[in-house]
Image (tube, rainbow, N blue to C red; front, side, top):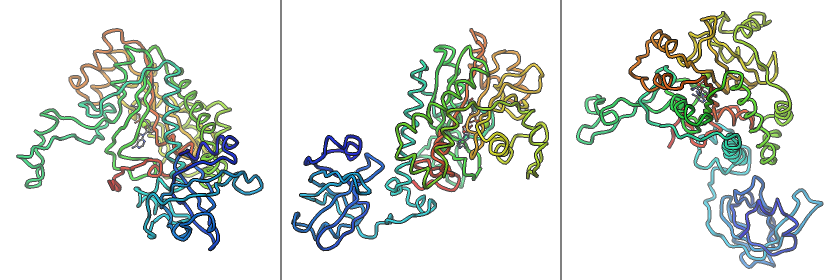
Length: 461
Ligand code: 4AD
Ligand code: MG
């Protein structure tokens, strides 16, 4: 049988030919003489229109009663219909039900709310919106690999179970082995001596520190994998399990870091617009009006660069009351980030050189002794999409920072050792994969770009 995508992409090759397709019914309507099925086989965003007639197929009654979600095998002739809404249809000669469906199928042909669809995570990939979202998710993942591989980066798999806290922020899920002889919940107590065969471990919050190991061997590397954060934030942009892309580049300073990030974002957007035009049109029409124009502008213009200190100036001058008052030294809140990107610049903005006290221990201390060589990329509609920095390569400065922040040298001994043996200047960043998907699709909740979202309130299966 033929994939429906092939019919849409190479229509003329199949015109007036007999073909066989398989797929699921999206809609089924008609009279007692003929009927129309919109058949979707998942290979393509759009469905194939199938026409079946009572005097052509002998199981007309059975087919006309087949509920949505039933699976069909159809043999017929592809007929071009240039005047009609759909460019072609399949005139059925034989229709076979491969799998029936109950008529109480929860996804009927109407617009369901995203909240409702979240409750049926096992069925929502079949809806238009989620079919578009998850195909784009797959394409963005491919585009990211393509971008880095074409630029000579080596893909590193960093560990999921790890003993180190890469961000030094303590927002980790602990990993424990269960001893059947000593069940964990007896008396409500957990026996932590059972931690990863006696060692305390957690799920990774970032593969950065391990990526730095590989950058010192391969120069340009990247990770791309699942990441876990135990922060209890119930926002539309935070998940407990999300994916992150973390390039790490030796001999690279903050400016080179930002250039790579900007080129990567533009590459991803271009790739998706070229390879998922039907999905992008759908998002543009039904999810986020003006999306395509905005993305086109982003690809064609330069990102803004301002320092944290300049950002604070802008916020203080703003003709606006913020819920969270602005002072030099505060961590920028979503409302501040959105003001800067949505009201001042209306495009992506790199904010650099943050106060050291609000950033991680590994960021390179600037000459002023107060700020670090950090670069966050903020975008309209979302806020922070990338967090990055030049890393502290000076052993004495790094040790002093760790001491200031109460981190133990023994926990990071190998990280410190990288500075002793050819530890050149290097930089990297982390792109939140889901936030990137939100950005290119216009979807506004992270739960709707994750196939199986895990947030403090949802983890259905
Ligand atoms: O800013 P973050 O915490 O930076 C790091 O983890 C660095 N180690 C990255 C690096 O330099 N290699 O996280 C990076 C990005 C954020 O900008 C955000 O897009 C995303 O990861 N992110 C989350 N996405 C979804 N849910 C969460 N709870 C997230 N936390 C961070
Ligand atoms: Mg960050």
